[in-house]
Length: 506
Ligand SMILES: Nc1ncnc2c1ncn2[C@@H]1O[C@H](COP(=O)(O)OP(=O)(O)OP(=O)(O)O)[C@@H](O)[C@H]1O
Ligand SMILES: [Mg+2]
Image (cartoon, rainbow, N blue to C red; front, side):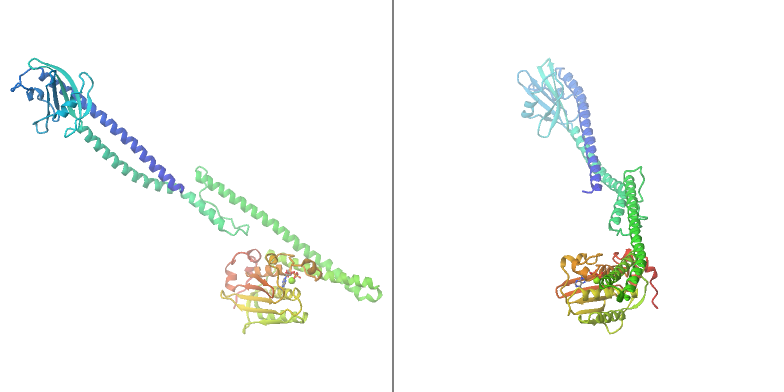
């Protein structure tokens, strides 16, 4: 149950409880006050009746006391008087609303006979039309008729009537109070909890945010941060937490930046000594005639390994610069031409691999960096050549996509890539068979560069592989998508700075 509903229900329950207590108290008080008033009247009525009865006038028929003897002037409507002579004779009458007199039944007389003389008034249910009565008994000596006990009673109906009326009023007032209380409580609770909603909203906004940039949380704050209120304290703590996260992200980005800078500087610095090593090795090879064959072999190894290391250092430098968002120079690029160049080069390099192209009739143009895109195609085609046996058929294709972008595919029917290796394929220095690859001069940076370059272009590279069919697909986005935003966000790190350089297409 929501906090809001719980609060409203608690307030409503409280109103019901308070109304019930107040209502019950009022009803009990009213009943006892009215009963007290009736007892007062009963005392007077009893006094009047006993005075009159004590006067001793003879009844006209001699059988029973005169009605006037029992009901003197001044008695209220509903008053009953019963007499009980010691000999057993008894009788009684009730004064009706219309001043006529009704006789009490034998059963009623029987019940009234139980009333004791000299005790406080009691409540008695006489049944029939009479209902409940307050009754009191008194001993009277009539000089003519003899000793008798007089029982006088007053009806409790007025008391019950006012109790019922009050109960009705209490119920109506309670229902009204309930309606008003629930409306007011709902509005007040909603108003009080609105800042909490804003905190929750901010929290879910942050949860949905891609936190790949250190300034992602800048300006994201909960507006309700007044420490005087409970919700404000939550807001303050939340804002402080966002601040800490932002700082941590900035610190992380700074340290990543340092590492990138270090790799870029180191690779850059390594180029010069490597060039010297290569130069001297080459020089030595040229003078090979004067040197023993062992030394010639050793120097040729030095030369070839320095060539390999130079290319590795170049790759590392390129990756570091792509990470920084530099290195990409956008221009209109003829992708078809790049593919044809790369395929021709590959054909010349390994004639044992039949290579086919699958290109649209019209030349395909994209926006990007020609040199880097050329490198992407070369890396993929080289992989298809070097990691497959001779005779493996390679197909390079270009196909326009529905979203306006272009798909570049490099397919081969070689042995395929092990499924457990696929998730790591684009990581740096990842090789499926490291022992064999190393001797073949592979470093495992080729696909990492492909991935980084494609991401810097706002695109993505994917692979599917099974024995006999391995397909690398490079998706390059439409120019509009490239300029508008960061696509699915994963290319943001490398591409963010570069997109400013996207040229206007004429
Ligand atoms: N077409 C392919 N068929 C089979 N395996 C492949 C194919 N392409 C890549 N691989 C596997 O993926 C690994 C990683 O490729 P990647 O291009 O990143 O590195 P590399 O080719 O080993 O070295 P580099 O390209 O840096 O010289 C390769 O070592 C190879 O095992
Ligand atoms: Mg490779």
